[in-house]
Image (cartoon, rainbow, N blue to C red; front, side, top):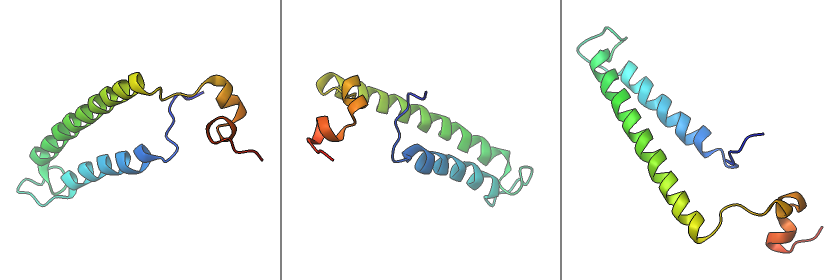
Length: 95
């Protein structure tokens, strides 16, 4: 069972799309050295460094914000609420 709750597929759309965009922009860029298709290893190396830095910053920032938010308002509902479904405990909605 996965412990990740990404109901809107935010990472699948924006995360993977952004990562692939950075990698493919580095490969297909118009550069002076054509050893890695058109962009060259220099541009590709810079893009990979920035990709690692931005990914690390985003992960750490999101983790910190989730931890702060979780101390103020718990982000997870109880197991009983999950088993009943969230319509009844959260919204008092009955079928």
